[in-house]
Length: 198
Image (cartoon, rainbow, N blue to C red; front, side, top):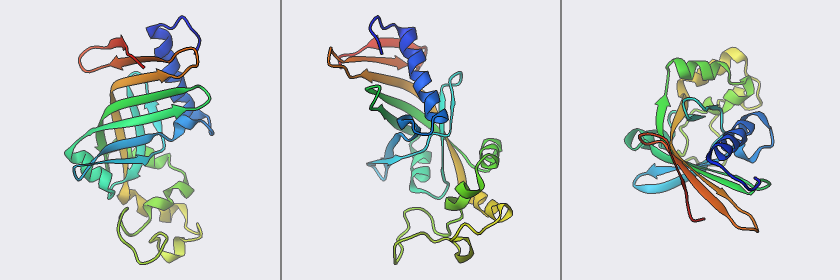
């Protein structure tokens, strides 16, 4: 980012970086940290950004419907996504309210666009975080070597969910040797923009 920063320039820059997170294979914004509350404790994990909608101000990722985070998000829909772009020296801390899509139009459309090989993790017989006797997954034996057909991969749909994240605020931090810059966009009632102390 250059100097002469304005609200519009920063906003456009943020969405440009997020869009690159979808389109550029090696973008560090492709895999943000997602943090929420599970069993009254903070929990954080890496997720893969799957869709963004600037107009609706949403970010989307996929998950196993049986995972602890789904159960937790049903109780408390508030969460945070943290992105960091080392080369751009930018951190984005995005607070969101989540909505789980399971066996609905949004989940069905996302599943249809999920590659055959990417469906493997939804074919696992045991739920995520289940205790097992030895390292590895609990895939059916005939699926271990990616030897399953597209038709067989449809079995995974029963475990597939989409997490849609509705943005409440975007905290933008730019790290620079000449002086850090920080600002926040808030969308709780109407859009507000404020500079913050870095």
